[in-house]
Length: 378
Length: 125
Image (cartoon, rainbow over all chains, first blue to last red; front, side, top):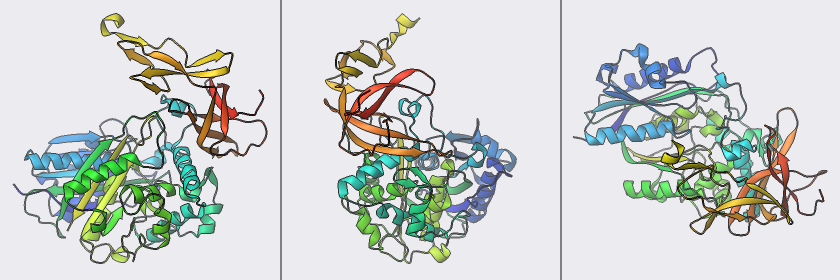
């Protein structure tokens, strides 16, 4: 049995599409992935669906009109890590020999929710007292700026970079460039975060990948998965450093060990920039630089396209938006295209090893509820 | 049925009015303090621990609603190694600072139930 490889990818535009359903968006991404993989739905033995805000049985609803073999469908909700978690489970099934060819897809349609911050569980202790995701990240930003004597410009520059990247991505329908001044002058959301420092909250989209242990018939070179890790948050109610991104650094350590690589071996990264502060904290948690050094790394240009280690060449969540069920797989699609030399104007030259990081969920007592990291190789 | 499953709902309030003012009531579990306390206990009910009426502001933010209103939120560190999240309220326009001392006061949740918030420790209420 061969190791599993990603042999086809597909993705929809990310934008506001209230005229569609999440099921048809998923079908669009799935059909693109199957065509890219050179396989049909008849070759797919099982399907894994990441979805957060849809109703019951999202996978079956999306697949219903695709004439599947009626094999297993697994529905995964791990908040923003749903798609990546679905990929992790699919890889386990392939490595165990239970299946040979599987489909993994993620979808969400946030335009159906009406806008505003993503709804969190209203029975959660913090949420009953006014917590929203922007506020949680705002407090992280506030503390980070205080601890390191930094100004808000350090945050704004993340948005400037990723929005610039996003203009090169045909699927990032929201993406417009913005200057540092425009980012800082945009409407206040939760101090110090302004609107253009937060990923758009009303975005619809879907992404899909096909994996197999059989020989590839895909259009592009198959991609190896060197590491696939999912972790959950450590319950802590004491005095912790909320800028330390504990779950990400822990998950990254496991992923690096699994892949036999370190941060210096990476050529390109897609990470979970739901807010500008997120990207800075994750530079540090992924070991790209030391604590407090993220703004300097950003300012050096190292994480921009053309730099030493481009981060979020797709534009990230800040430029593309964040349909949570799809985001983790959208990162995988981007990185596969990078490793296959198919990223167009966003191409990172000579990319061979890539890392995707996504976190998920705010429940009280943990850094995040879930984190997933994949390391891919050409 | 409840007794057989040995699930007990927490009876005591997470708030206690004392001579020192309003204090938050934490659980003491395995020599560590936990706030908020659990809603349910499986087995023994842990002992309670009253947090000091004053803590230190670890971080904060001001949330701006689309209608122009705003509200403060903070994380407050208490002696004993406990961090508590809650609303920040003040009379007048207060510029919150990391490290300032804040006091626990009574405050209503949106559903009208009694709860807590933090005010600048120098505020007289």
